[in-house]
Image 1 (cartoon, rainbow, N blue to C red):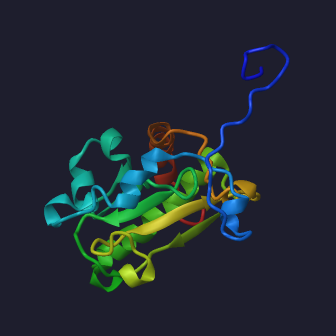
Image 2 (image 1 turned 180 degrees about the horizontal axis):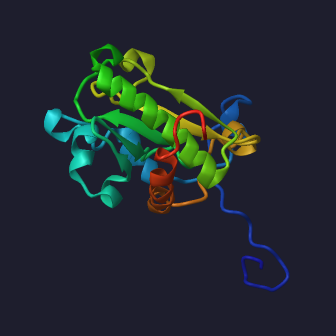
Length: 199
């Protein structure tokens, strides 16, 4: 359509003027509006004390509302609210401790077992080809919530670093978090029952 509404002609694409940065990214990047991310950027919901640390509050919520996939004795598994990839889990001790060296032997053992189970579950549900497993210790190391230890289990697939994140600086998540949580939670009980080495 034309601006006059005539058939057969396309309307001009909507564009936002971006000041020139002498041939830099602003001159070539398109924009994908994601206003829901502004709460994260502004730090809304950041904890102000132990009463509102997400990893202390989440276990008090229902599994569905807290995006909890599984609960153990000392550790729980929860979907990341701001995932790097679909199925991005975090394994979190219930105790509010900042450092891996603060964990008890039981917590270390269950954290390891939950990591193994998370990998089995995500592989069975989504066919992940690999994982990035790790934790950032301290804000200087990149921990967004440095005061409460948590380990990331990020599933990876061949080709998941395609043009969208590399060129478009955008992650594509094919499923809403509640649906992902339900699929992973349903598969967790079966995967947790598999002895180590038999998966």
